[in-house]
Image 1 (cartoon, rainbow, N blue to C red):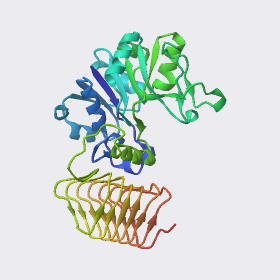
Image 2: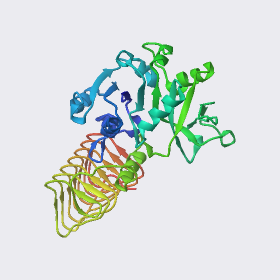
Image 3: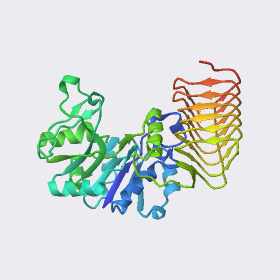
Length: 370
């Protein structure tokens, strides 16, 4: 079985994090997010993965290489111009040899792909869409089914009086290769807005596969944080690395925690970190390799990428610090604030209310207060 993973987007909703790193390569639990999808595919018998790249394509190949480290074969195809979701798959058509999977590159799931593929083959359709349930159907495109599981309609962001289901397209498909004959070559083309509605109009059999599997689109800071919290709280399978020094607290090799510091789970602290005296690392924190947390700091629900330096008496709550961020003393960062790579913040600043600071910015002392 082959899988095509669409990783060409610029991840604009996750800026400034994605200004220096493609969204599928963003750290998730201290490993590139895309490894979650690659490992899921491998566990369910996928032997070859085709990455459709566009934005910062070299980042993918330099990390994954030929894929052998993760037990798969990796093929890379780069778009010269944006081709949208279906156009990107058309662009890799020459590598596709039979029934294949398609993934959006920003979806975290533990979907049983084996069951999805078996369902597709049992129904004998040309396309099967993984569907998930949501609380607010009006914010998504809905996919009503008949009693046999066949798709009967696509409803794009309906009003409440139009809602007939809570099932949405979850961005994972099983497709037959002949469908790509309907897709124009070298042009932007969308699964959601063009190919799937066209197939429905032509009477081509398409089926929906509803599943209660975990599902999260990590495309915003809030969802990126929530995905970390859900993994920490074991809402989907994950193999934690490092040593579990107390219940749900994992610490990497070479990390030093001062005897007068406090760490509470669930929390992951990567290798080579240092937590100083009287600092508190509370629940739902993930610290990347080489982070330093100064004396008297308080962290809760904070995600720090590699090499962050946090000065004394800082408070970090529900925020993301990208690689190499440096905070002076008594800096407060909270309320889903996001600091891009290499940001420097002088002492006595207060960053909250979802503020986003672009990579390399240098904020002088006592500049921002909310």
